[in-house]
Amino acid sequence: MDCIERPGLGSHRGRVDRISALSDDLLVLLLARLRCAAAAARTSVLSRRWRGLWTHLRQIVFRGVALPFLEAAAGRVSPAVSLLEIHVPVPVPVLAGRLAWLEPAGIRSLLCAAARTAPEEFVLVVPRRSIQCAIDADLPCFHRATSIVLDSLFLLRVPDGVEFPVLETLSLTGCIVVDLDALLSRCPRLRVFRLKMSRFYSDG
Image (cartoon, rainbow, N blue to C red; front, top):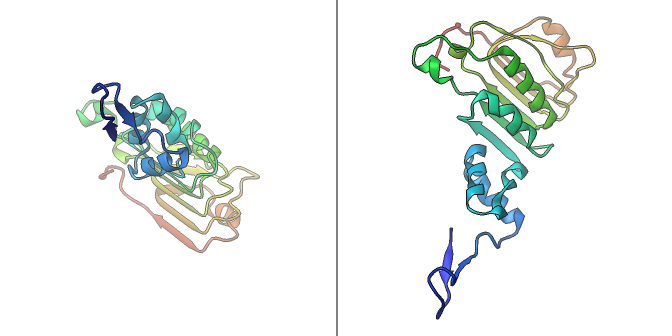
């Protein structure tokens, strides 16, 4: 924190917090330079002035936030962000070689929470070594998304009525689409489509 000491005052009472005195817009710009929503959220320990400012970032990137907390964090994000990028970490027991998997229900719920933020670009990466089998999930409506990237083992369905009216780029890695024709028909502006299969166990 950038502080200065006023002449003639004590070392503590004379300190002026100039950064916290900036406007919200400027503080949000500072937080954006961190390029990590979790790191931006931790700035709330500086003072009450910083609390909740990270939720107004236009580009939200979650790294290292455990799955049980991701949905709640996504729910605090201000709608209509330009980017929502989520990298779900591998659970600690999996890293230690013990049996423990991410719950498919948690991933499905996270997808729905992400859709509610209405991002222009959406990225979701779920390490394949952290899931026991393909995640059976409905792909929710991302009505503002121009780009969607999904990287994990998904068995995707597109419910009736779900459309992607402005989607231009769709990248699916490790995903199986139950009805690919139906998905593509819901993307009238699609220009780039990437579909890449991968082995179950791979670096995630």
